[in-house]
Length: 309
Image 1: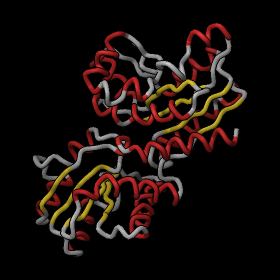
Image 2: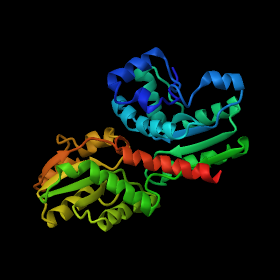
Image 3: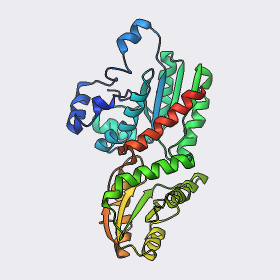
Image 4: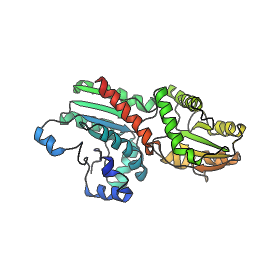
């Protein structure tokens, strides 16, 4: 079974829930529902529809995959009726894990692009779900250059936090999703991945965007770079907060969110470090893809590419 075609939010949405998604998957249906994937009309016209290839690192957490990456794909699918929307992952390890665990195959970027060429698709937009233009995003952009001559129109969308306006939109979306849990004693600590690439500066830029919006109780940490968990624990304590809400600054709430952020049995986790610093800790294990306003930023980035093709 191939998992490269995307279903609309109404098809994979909240009305079905996780059980409904599993039931649909068991039927072998992998193309969109009514709307963007009118396969009969395509066959009759014998003209391949243009494609938006939503490209993600991926996650092996199945339920999380549907409500984060799947939600972004569905919003893009709903926004652009003339396009087919398809999925590619860049982590071969995750692709292999999903194949072994579920029997479902998700294309890597090269497989997905080769299929588009073989099908005679003439227009393709690649929209990565990455937060920054770090190594992963730039690998996709570089790989895409090998395919540009094979299409009449070809473009790539920017990552989530590319501009100051993007950063403020995402900051506002996170604030709106979290504010009901806040009070004057509470700080909100966001955990990003971090990178050795120059793009790691995006985390300090995002902190600046939070500060400019007046969200002084919000702090940004990273798993693998700077600012570190210890940096944020010290800053939040110095600011006088006694309670900390932790949530991932990541599209999916997968391994990093569950283990590096929320696992109090791991002495090196964000939650454990905050507790050791004297904070009462609440972890919200939800990816950014679960926030509708964040998904809309990806829709806007896709629209920007279409406008310039």
